Amino acid sequence: MLVFLTVIYRYFLLAPISWGEEMARFLFIALSMLGASLAMKERSHFTITILTAKFPAPVRAWLDVAVALGATALLAIVIDKGWGLTLLNRNQISPALGVPMSIPYLAVPVGATLMLLFLWMDLVIKRHEGSDRPAADAVHSRTVD
Image (cartoon, rainbow, N blue to C red; front, side, top):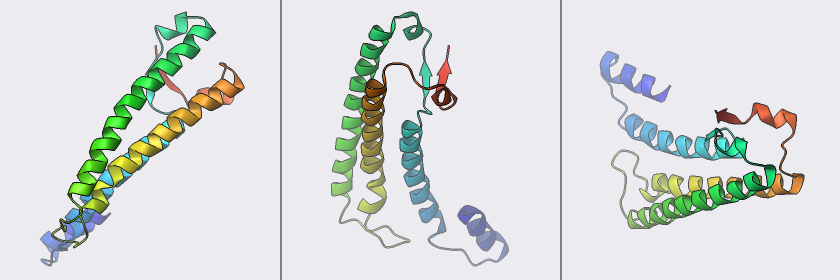
């Protein structure tokens, strides 16, 4: 809606909204990171189970831990580098909105931290409940065989 209004104001009303494009960009980044973390919470990221489905449940449980450790390593890098960029840009002011650039940059480490939290919460809950998920959970899991 914001992008639509920015275009309307710029091209039809000849009175551009100076901050519209910048705000849309910042919101896109923040909503992408929030959406990725919510997808992690809802188990909506794609998984490829063609190989893991052939293993017995105890082996699959260990593979889940291995995948979680790999994802943790990746997310730790994203958190570390995202936080570094957030701190690096804390004194830079955005041209149109006039806010510190650390605010939009903060979406990356916060989103990655939420993803990490949801990843391990899911693994712990799955371990606590056993390796079999309830039938209702199968709707939320997206798998590709």
